[in-house]
Amino acid sequence: MSRQLTRYHSICPIHNLSINSNLVLNNFQIFKNISKEDLETNHDIDFEIMNFLQKETWVKSPIYVRDFELVGDIDSLSTAFKEAGKQIQHFINSLTLFKPSFTYIDRGPLWVIPIPRPTNGESSKGDFYGIIETHESLELDTSEFSEFSSFFDTCWNFFSEEITTNLAKHIETAYYWLTKTRAALNPYDRLIFQITLIEALVGGGQELTHRISHRCATLLGKNSKERGDIYDMLKKYYGQRSTLLHGDTSQIANKDLNNLLEIGRTMILRFLSLSKSNYATTKSDLMDKLDRAVVDDEMRNNLLEKARLIFEQKSDPRLNF
Image (cartoon, rainbow, N blue to C red; front, side, top):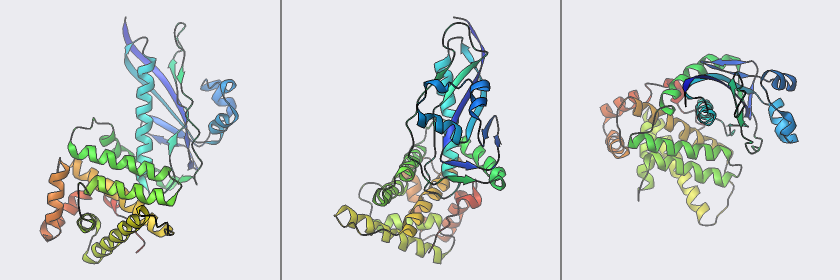
């Protein structure tokens, strides 16, 4: 089978995102919205095969559009579809980490169309992604576009690479629990998922609560007061999880869930920075350094510098003490 450079057009709605202007990032765009007529005429979207909810998703959501090229077999639409899926997932990953929010961001149906359409074989490939439960929209304002563009480029460098180090695998696991947290609507599920996220990064085995709390406080607190406050927070949240798992379903304050979410989000960003700067390649190595930094001021300052190196103020937690 001959090989050639083939161009593709990919398009997909983004659930639960709100933008007030079109967003251009690298080699793709997010349109505030695209009319049904435009989707049918210029993007080859076939509304006749959709149900009502699927049609509503297309006409009421921001739309991701990207043209790209692949070198490969002429019959490579499945490969192009996988590549398009990876690309849009990088965008969603970046949105999820960019700002504190419980909004669950995910893609809708993804369609990939060869340019030009072939006369033989498949003329397009798409899926009918399940309907995502509607959350309050994540708003990305025009004033944030430049900052998000830089943030996206930085995240791209991690998420587009093959996971090779032990530490990177733990970061990926923590990110999975972050998305589970944001998809959950039950506050008890959110509490359990967020504690699991933290344990993926700084826990393991029979680690004591106070050691995990110390590690988080050391990595996030910029002074002794903040470290103390974060330590107390984590001890409290671990206590809440323990009572929950033993059958006590006392009400959990939204403030506590928001703080725990922000701790998890910024812990991931700081771990990403430490991973990219080769401060540590294994979780056990980083835990040894974190434990020593609890009592070593010079080591702690160096750790914090490396942890903030890439994302800077975006990795500073916004906590309500």
